[in-house]
Length: 329
Image 1 (spheres, rainbow, N blue to C red):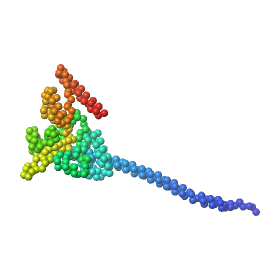
Image 2: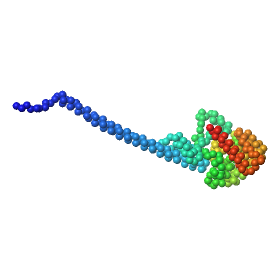
Image 3: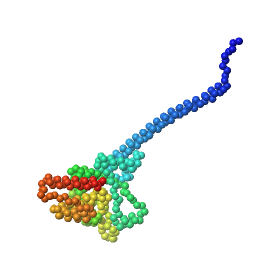
């Protein structure tokens, strides 16, 4: 009989096939899981990018709103309060206040030549206010109120370059600016405090009420409202006596009207003639305000032509700018 070549089943081979088959399924699962992980990583990365873009958009919009708020407040001489920033700027934004505030200041400095400066705390001027401040345990370190100030160099702050505001008219704005600058100068030169009766006399002498088209009380009330001056009661009032008030420099006045501004008002009012008179006035200004006397510009008497005078003034200006640069370094 022919021998049939039959394949006999191998127990060991069959067993190995059965043992090798199961691992194929986990490998497929591993490939699927790795692909799913890659998809999740890509999708999560897209979410992160979208989150960053959304945050940048929120920051840009919040900065724009804060800049607009600051300019709108400055037109009306109102302060920018932190509470107003929280409710009007950050109510729909998740960006922190400090980040928005610093970005807005950079925007104002770089594009508008302005900056937000915090107002100092209201001074305790009366005895009662000082006593209450000692009793209170909580010490306030900042006011939480800001105003816009110019960061332009002094040469560009001339009225010819930087005219007065628009409201209600440029003339009224310039008049009001001159009046509160003059009154603040009087308060500073009077030792930081002046009685209301003296204040009224000064305003009458310069025709302040007529120039501002308001009576004297309304003019002073506007200065108090704008925080240029403070009006405080002069101690306890005896029964039947009339109340007396004193005026002090307010927080906004301390920021906008510096000692150099007061010195400029004094020079403009007295307008001394002759070098000796100028030197004497500068000594008095320095003693009253605690500042250095204004440096003297000397011109050779023989060089009386305009070119020589202009050259001397230009050299003096260049020397002062170089000095400011060295001090800044």
